[in-house]
Amino acid sequence: MASATISPAIAAKSPTAQVNDHVPLRTWICVTGVLLGCFMAVLDIIVTNSSLRDIAGTLSASSDEISWVPTSYLVAEIVVISLTSWLSAVFSLKRYLLVNSTLFIIFSVCCGQTHSLSLMILFRVLQGFTGGVLIPLSFDVILTYLPASKRAIGMAMFTITATFAPAVGPLLGGWLTDNYGWPFIFYINVIPGALLIAAVWFTMDMQPINLGLLKKGDWWGIFTMAIGLAAFEIVLEDGNRKDWFGDPGIVKLAWTAAIFIPAFILIELRKKEPLVDLRLFARRNFGLGSVVNMALGMGLYGTVFILPLYLGQVQGSRRRAMQAGAVAFLGKPFNDEQLLQTIQSALEIDKSSTKATKR
Image 1: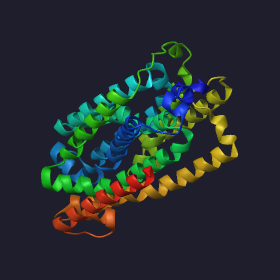
Image 2 (image 1 turned 90 degrees about the horizontal axis):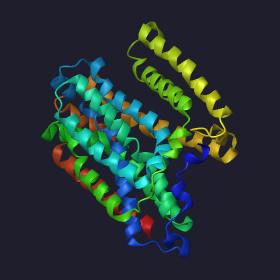
Image 3 (image 1 turned 90 degrees about the vertical axis):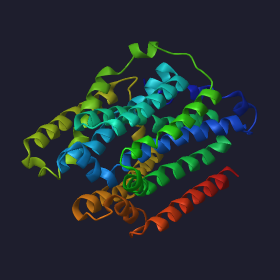
Image 4 (image 1 turned 30 degrees about the vertical axis):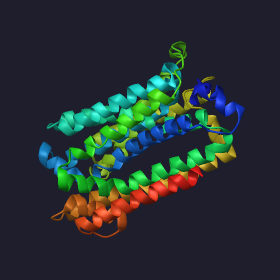
């Protein structure tokens, strides 16, 4: 299973990539479509934060209960990301992308339609399980379909996607909530999702299914990883609100994480074909790069995740959703006309940056 951490499709790159460095338009459409899916998955982590008070009002939920709307999505996404490469090798890259993209759209619409907190949490979990697939598979597609000389461009496009989505998420979510209602923060996934499905369907080659990998699955590693990471994520999300170890539920979850995460590490280090090859972290470049990425993620996502929650739930305002997103985006509130101009300018900058990287 160590070899399954990178899709086997990488070993059989497209014929055009082997002949020369010219990349046809069909391949760029494929890469752009998958990056659009990655944009949606990252956006859905942040987009609800400016609208939690409005969602709580509709679902008759308290501030503690409504916090499960972003938490459930994150927990599911964290668990499925580690499984994605293996599952895409089992069911083939194209099939896995198509199925999860379709389900992601369906569950997004279900989130917007629900009027029950329990159903909202359920659909957010399912949305996280399907949306989390789209982030790591972006790397897989870039490495599979682009030649070595063009992968830097693909990674630059991914970077623009991964940074632009959390930056614009609170602002876009607040604007949609104040002008059209909070369900539209989920409905906006429909059109990009349809474009993603079309791009994958018409541009990617179908690979055979390899169900034999299921027999070699690192099932104990999967079990311990899922339980341990889910418990640890909930502790981090809810610990501050529940007085950390003063709450019995947090104590139980902390003990669960403390048992299952070390168990997962031991299993992976002893397995010949582990689900996640942890030995890679012993390599200097890989380990250092992981530390830098972690620091970048803390700085990038920390601000855009916490600030809208503080402005919307603690401060409150007449136009709390949109103004909270505006402050998170530019550091100050502004009116609707300025908001539309800012969104338009940001989209134009993103388009020009993408064209520049392609050149």
